[in-house]
Structure formats: structure tokens, C-alpha cells
Length: 68
Image (cartoon, rainbow, N blue to C red; front, top):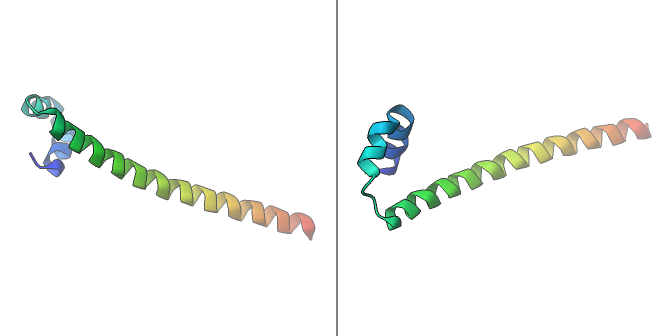
């Protein structure tokens, strides 16, 4: 099964998809786990950068306001 099809299947019809992937071997399982881990890491880094840059902007604005 293609990775995109698996994700779509788990979201739309999880019971049927679990039945289809039950015979999957460990190598295939690890491959899908690594793909999901990479996607999660990329999204976490993006969100962290947005939060840190926003916090930095707020701190800079506060320090400018307090020194004026």
C-alpha cells in the first residue's frame, strides 16, 4: 500500500485499513514510522520557530517600551 493511501485509510476507515496492514512486516512498519517521525519533526521545528520569533518580537517591544 502507498503511504498516502494508508494515511487516508487510517483517517477515513481505520478498521478496514488495520485489517489490510495486519500482515505487514517489521521493515515496512519501520519505514512508515520513520516517515511520520520526519514529518512530525519538520512541523515541530516550523511551529517552534514561529513561537520563538513571536516571543522574541514581544520581548524586544517590551524592552524598547521600558527604555523609552
